Image 1: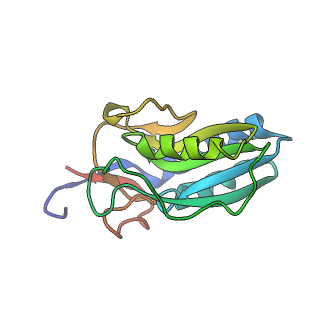
Image 2 (image 1 turned 60 degrees about the vertical axis):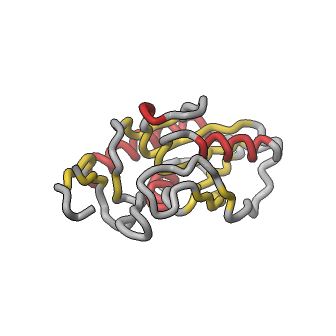
Length: 173
């Protein structure tokens, strides 16, 4: 990827500002509710950590590990669940947090799986939405940024096992 030019899509400051705005929206939505935030690992861990610190209400956080990309720039369309929840979500308000909705296969699979545990509600929040790539009928309830069809990295998003630690989001063009 390094033979292409690096273009910053969202700066650290833009990301921080938008996460504060989302946190305020989610605080209003979930004030005095039994909220459990479920972060989809590994991509959403940085976004989820920053986001839950901006939600001013009591909440629990749990994690699911899914995989659909491997070391490729495109989703395989097949979602693997590599871990299970530790928490009981029956009768609770669930907020699923992910880094990106691309084809939609991962989020749709996660929501369908979680419905089986009988939560009170399920909503989704993503850092990035790439609607031009959608292959299944799913729309995130909360979106930080919508992006065109670019392969992006940084701020938790990876290429292979690298670039998650970069504090901004960029693409090679």
